[in-house]
Image (cartoon, rainbow, N blue to C red; front, side, top):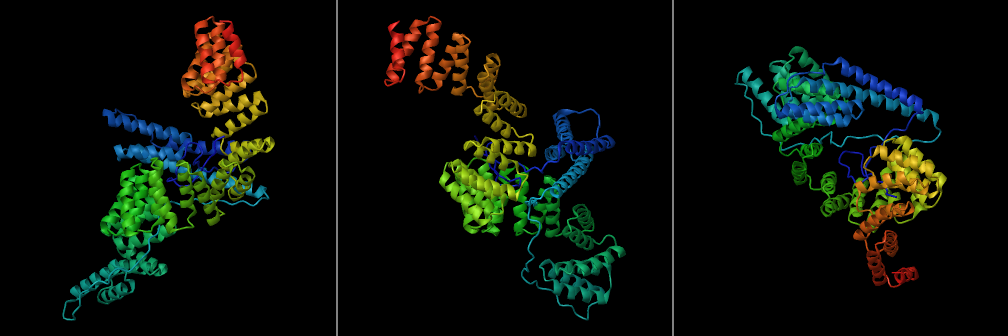
Length: 626
């Protein structure tokens, strides 16, 4: 049974088939209460959508207008199904076509409000569950992938002008202010304050308060910074530096909307610096307004070409925009400024990993581990890559090191357990799956893979319990249903197997395993007509699966449809010539339809290909009758 893998909780996580990354889901409430709260969230969204001027009917001229309408329709459809991230992604695409379309902003605002309401409900559900449980629970906090803060470092001390007492008061004031701004730009905050105070003695203006507020913020004297900024704004609302200071104070408190509004006022007040645009970029990124984030980070870089973190975040933004070429360029610029930035190495490796360039990915992940040997995220990614390169021993070592580096990371214990299970060390795997669940008890893939391990050691009751737990946590995941179906087949409980496989097929209509399982269940229950239908559906999805072709041929044989049986066995043999039993079945089908020439040729081929075949006496008997 396939194992699942999760590498990271961020968007840059690597994805491997099904085993890979799935978003963790919150622990469930009892079904009746869950339904009630889900209807509340849906009702809130529906109300918001109805109240807002969202249905704007007009004539759409040209392909761009049609594409815009399509993106808006998709965004609304995903929003109605609570897939808010997907909905916002389509709104970003719509924004690129027409940033002035009022429907985009209205729908975005409604979705964000509904998303916040849903998150609040999830938090309430989790709190209630924790109250009812005596078991210790670790709530994993999701952290943004962007670098929010930058390190303030002094640059080269600037040369400032000497101020002569012979100069006019206006000239002296101007020079002191210019000197203060130069010091401020290079992060010499004390020196800047001294110059601004000299200017204040000449003329106590709102401009002095505004720029001093920036300097005091740089000194981390937030009380003084806020007082001066408020004073400047009260005297002159156009003071851009004061709005910048207020924006930074709000930004530090994670009041993103308020901070962004202050930054915009700073720009209107003709004040800008790299740090401000950098902070704006972070806010836009967190809001998933990636085009705006890109513009802000680019502006920060234009003002400070050595702003390493701006290049890093710009790279993340390009990844979010699915522009990997420009992402790699931005990350390369970051590495030129920060050659030992392991996070950048991991992100570059992830781009190559997702592009299936695993050898390139391995180089960057290995370099990240070399720089930071205890970087569990890099070690997990390195293990993922070794798996893709089929270097399983190295993958196991990488996961073990990740676990040793951070045993509290549920992904470390989870991936280590997976690889132990892959090497059939199921008892050890169960131990680490249990640890992963203890660290994050709402992580569905851990329960699913634990169920697989129990299934392998034939502890079916525990396997079923964990499959059901995985389903409770993620009812839209077909994998646990496939596991249950396979287990029920093993236990000859065909009715339950059929139910499980059908549920998997409903969730994933192109699941070959689901339809094969349905066919197997019907075949075991001797409901042959339905088995044939299911097997044919499986072959539509995967026409080259020889096991299904053999099973289909066997059913045709049981129902005495020997022509169809022969056709299935012929297709099998075109794909694989290794199974003597299928050759014999084909020969017997030919005999039944009186095609003695083909029967004889097939029997002779058995003697030629499989001289030690266990049923050679039967082959010889058939030949003697021809």
